[in-house]
Image (tube, rainbow, N blue to C red; front, side, top):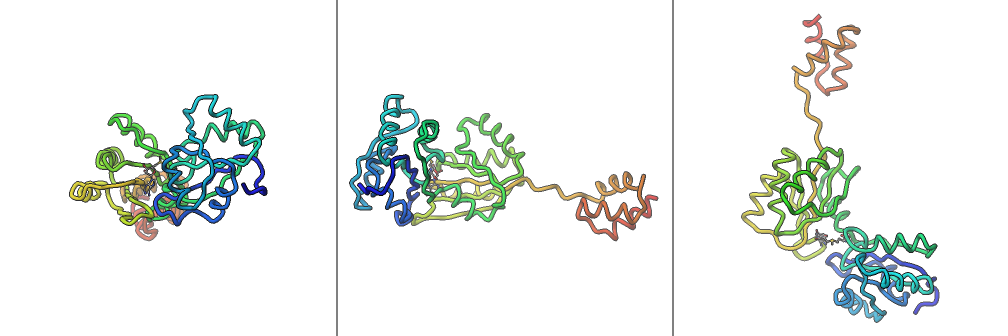
Length: 275
Ligand code: SAM
């Protein structure tokens, strides 16, 4: 064990496909801890073998009984312990939340080593607006619950990110076409792996593509934010009538042009006719 590591919990992100994506600091921490808590000892065992490391692996998930969590908390208050998940960033649709919460409440040092995360890679690849995004885990599998979730989240002015499985992709795209028509969608599949792809378009186009080419592997599904409806000249006329109650034609045209993005000169001509 590397004596320089202080006791505590070290949350370590691991690759989501390409093993080269583990960070240098992630490897150093895994080398320096006395144990690694993981979801599946066989999967993490393969990563450790690839890295030439032989640390003790302890199976952990948030459904573990109190006794198992207590033992782990006792260990990390005395020694450095890493937490990893099968792939990517622990706690992101993966176990760890309860452990981190308990550790923090007990004053155990907790730090996190950033690294691969499919949701973040998906949003960076998709070409969808990335200034605001909302990660919502997996959509429900039942039709009604999935539709309700899409209707609720669809109102949020942000790009939506979901984790998805290949057998359920077409059902989810169909639900998006019904509940959020006209929204741009992206499917980011097999990220960092040999058959990585990111395909975007209207849900109907993606349904047609994936019906002809059934998708395999792991998927991040993204939905672009709601697009403000382009105002028509009819909308503008209603707005101009209201403005003209208290403003000159030029001022009314300027205000409505700013609000709608419509042409100011055309709006001025309309305002003059309405006066
Ligand atoms: N903690 C992980 C992370 O940081 O991305 C996610 C764990 S979650 C249980 C697994 C889901 O993440 C998969 O079903 C898939 O939706 C998504 N995922 C994981 N790896 C992926 C990859 N290489 N390409 C696309 N999606 C991936």
